[in-house]
Every structure is written in C-alpha cells, then in structure tokens.
Image 1: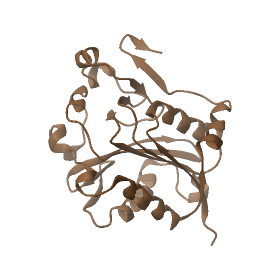
Image 2 (image 1 turned 120 degrees about the vertical axis):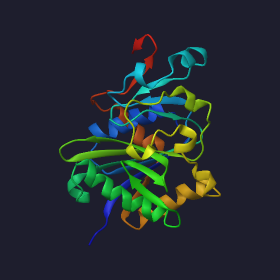
Image 3 (image 1 turned 90 degrees about the horizontal axis):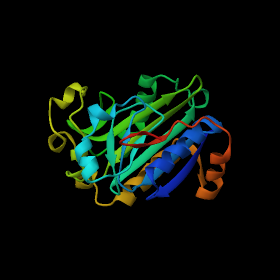
Image 4 (image 1 turned 90 degrees about the vertical axis):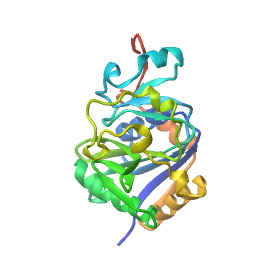
Length: 242
C-alpha cells in the first residue's frame, strides 16, 4: 500500500502570530496534508477563538509588562508561549488519512504519533491534554471542516513561572488538574530529554515511518499566504481587538 504524502515544514524561532496565519492559509487555501514543526517563538499569549480576556488574563500584569496577545482561529485554551515552546501542527484531509473530522478520532490518531515519540516515558492522552503521568506538557487546539482538519499542539520544553502569572486560574479546567496551580500541574520536557533538537528530529523519524515525507522551505510555503482565504487570526490590544 502506497504511503500517504505529508508535507513537512521545519521552522525555528518563528513568531507564533505568523505561524497561526500560515496554518490558517494552509487549512483554507491548500488541499495537501501538512505538518508544521516550529522550535520557539518570541513571547506571546494565545487565546482560543472564544476565549474571554477578562476571565483568562491578568490585565494588570499585562499593562505593567505587555507582551502580544493573539486570538487564534481555532478552539482550545489559553497558553503563554516563548522561546522554549515547541509547536507541532497537522493539517490533513480526512479521506486520505482515513481519520474523520471528529475531535475524538483525531486525538486517537495523534495519540499514536506521540506514544511512538515518547515510548520510554509515561505518556498519556488525558482530557485532551498530553501528559507525563498526571502532569501536562502539551496543550491542543483543533479546527474541523467537513473533509479537512487541523490539530495544533504547544509542547512545553521549558517554561518561565513568572510568565505563567499572565494567566488567571481558568473558570473551566480539566478534572485531572484538581485545582493545582501551574507549578504543580505542568511539567518540562527538558527534564526528560537531553536535547530539544533531537526530540524534534525523532518526531520527523516517527513521521517517516508512517508517511511519504516531502520537506519544504519557507519560501515555497509562504506563497500560499498570498492565496485568497478567510483570515480570522487576530492581534488583540487591551482596548479591543484589531
């Protein structure tokens, strides 16, 4: 059986705002299967499409120490990202992968990918989070269309506890969190892997075993941004969205 083609774009220190714009273009204005892997970004806060600033963010701290606030076009929770965050996004056609555009089906598929990547660790998919034991290291967001879907993951290689103070304790949390603060709820992948580049290289190796990979450069992929498509990724200022 012929392997399904998967286009792969490797990025490094690429701003998350631009990455989300690129993801949206690949989802809406292209018909191929994609995987974007980005190692790091400048600091920012990213909210899901329906996230409410007043309920989720420490606005006083943002006024004192401002960083960009972005509303992505997909669902999911609120995250603080920076140079130590890694991102992995799959944008795929349901029929080619035989993975229907339903959240549970997509999670079942991605779970197998990450089980292979973290085969020597106590990896778990629990309540839509990726965790080691009972501590979260990966948050997810999805966008579903009839025959095409996107699954975006933020992986915590490391995190700055002070930056986590930008986030209020959310009104809705996973049951397994059990009222734990960020320090007790999150874990760092760097405590389990010696090298970040090696980890991401291992992910590419896992994908090579499942797909026919086609590696792309930024120049060829960024031309897709110029195609007409709906654009819902937004920068937010604290006086309103723009």
